[in-house]
Image 1 (cartoon, rainbow, N blue to C red):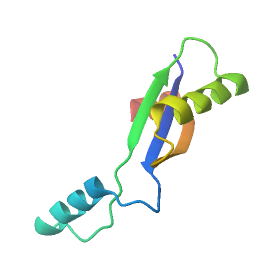
Image 2 (cartoon, helix red, strand yellow):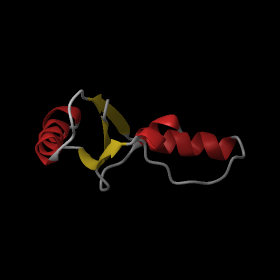
Image 3 (cartoon, rainbow, N blue to C red):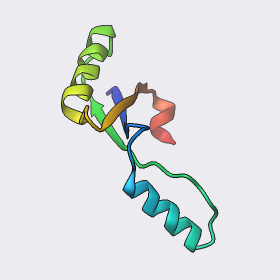
Image 4 (cartoon, rainbow, N blue to C red):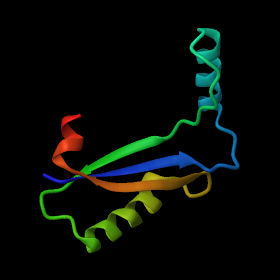
Length: 87
């Protein structure tokens, strides 16, 4: 069954306290100095074929339901193929 992946991230101009906490933990444990931003990943599995109409519908769902448009952006929408699912 096809799976559509939606990635949501905080808007670039907003602070990301969770990302800052992760970056601080990495630095404290000696694992390096990184800028970190934490987002969300959603996987929507469907039984039918994935066409342009379905992808447009999922994009609308992502913008209306899966993300908070005030503070987040939908940054990715892709279909997993069999090789992606095995990894």
